[in-house]
Length: 409
Image (tube, rainbow, N blue to C red; front, side, top):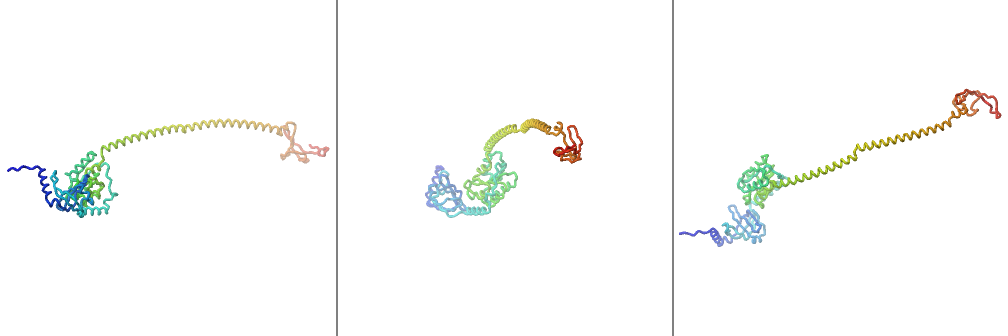
């Protein structure tokens, strides 16, 4: 007996009908912890509910989300009410949530907040101790899985932006019980080398359990103690881990880590061209300004030249010397005229001139001039000075004149 084969869509439709007709599955309440929560721009919410042993995918449409009195987050323990059905296109069953209330915070979320608060108080998150990311790192160490999409994204972006950058990969588990140990080993390995400028560590997105290796305390303390700057690139933009808070820089995704790690070579070339043009322009302007200044200084040098000043002073000195000579000649002529006039006056008043006219001058032996006969006593000797010599004389009274003054020789 041959049975007609069913199409895939028919199978999914049949299973969906069975689930929808199940009174338990079509109106069910489920308790669990939110994981891998995404709030789509359409308003729908996509997440998983999990416990220690299993998980189920959930969707809550935007018209049902409007009645929520809280914002769902990873780690929250909630009780949801809805129905189980099949999404026919993917053949995947999921829980369609109609209502949601909080029950508490999950254990991992509690541990995350506890460790976050502890390390924050110790200063591991302080911005003041974060190291600057080198602008153009020559060699970059990457600690991540060698098989995941994260390493491919990091390498692709870095090589596209800066082809000269070298990338060294330390393959490490990024999920599981030993993942945090291998991550620490990789970080310490790169820190021991003297040729690594920058370290990137991270992985792609996942649930809080899958990302938990980057929430371990030993990973946080290892990052804090590194001497080389670290970029943390864990999960998606909405995912935050302890490693993100301790790292020197957080990248929202592994691809973004590549963007933040190196500059774009084309942008660098463009910037260098701009700086080169600006340098040439500034240099030309500087040369022109200095040339104009030199020309002005040359003009000033000609105008204020010491040689010119010396020549002008030399010419002035010549004029002054000429004026001095003329003044001396004039002074000499005036002095000569004055001397001649004084000489003439002296000749007129000179006793010799009087003597030359027949007069004589009586001078006593002590050199005093005899002005009156009373100046001599009888018998006093004196000299008679004539124009051509001296005559020795002596006072002798011969006779008295009519006035009784006497006549003397």
